[in-house]
Image: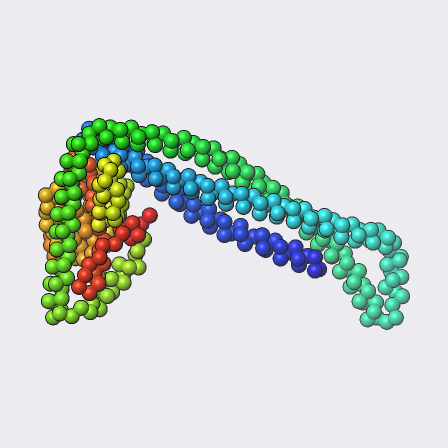
Length: 400
């Protein structure tokens, strides 16, 4: 019995990582689907941007994003390969254990059959019972013989069940082995596509270098527009904070309503819907070097999302439109307040709401502006604490 319990314990131990890896495999598949969807979108956006000769910078940003996505996909495939290797090792261990279990069961069953053969004479069995000292002993001996027969029957059934389980595990191992081959092939194909994307990026960089003087002038103009936008947003948010404090007679403490909305917003960190239905981030949050112009640093208070022309821009969370204005080079700028948080949407060619309107999550608030061949929406997230507003990294808040 101790051997049987040990086998059960070992089988249980082997099944634990199987379940854990199964969950990880599901998550990896979800990540893979998300990455592939983004890659397909970058392909589509690249084709669109190639139609406009003035959109070379946008092409470079999109192809750079595509390279990053392919690298992420390769990492995903590598994790799947690692999981696959662990799963194979696990199933091989299970198969070895089941083989040993069948061997032990057959040996035990063989001993039983041998003993039964030696005591096959019915007369001997009857004499064993009738030689009892009393009725109770005779009854016990008869029950022992019946139980012995039942044990033999159960032992035979256990051998059959274990053999069936072993056959199933062998089939599963073959499937995992096929998956291993498929993943290896896919990895090689993605490496080839990544290499091709890097060539495309080099071509785009070379084209842009030929226009460096022109691009530096454009970048200077764009940086001035970005600074104007940053300053305008900062001033509007500061003014909103002052107005809110004046409304509350100088109190900094948030009202219960503001606290509730802020808590609701925070609970959705990492799961906020994107402001556009289709898009890829081509300029990330924070300070970063210009993709082609040496010595130029871009300070981004949010993220720039490349999308398709005439895409609807939507509210990423429910709240109140507290500011709406326009600025040269950035189209309409719209700020929605969500308690102690604010989301900012700029580069809109038109708007569908007015200042003071309450909006719901996913509601259309405007349409993306296409500037210099680039349909890009700029999105920011701000946290208000006391008398100050601090820009947050939108990628930490948006759903992956």
